[in-house]
Length: 144
Image 1: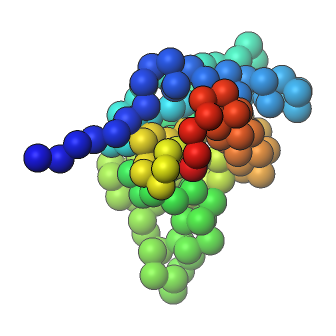
Image 2: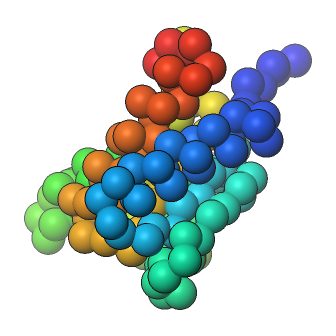
């Protein structure tokens, strides 16, 4: 029998609160998504002015962070012609993202979900996703 660890809804909201706080601090209205460890959407926020086109991108980034177990920025570097994972971005029904801004959420070394952010540049999205994790660990007391 397997025992699965996953985020609760309240913990997902903590991640979104971290995204919103950093987004506002940066002056960029972001779309932010949180998935469970299997990549299924748990919670989503779109700040006033967040790009409509960024809604599915944020969800796909969170999906990728959770199921691929690495940040989306890592796959951006690896998904180049001639590299070992070239073409991975067209897998999983096109939901595999290689744009920075998606990260796995870990607790005690176990991936329990993913967070994805979109509406800024890939670097700005990454900064917000990283800030969400910092906020999450500070608020929950969990260790990565």
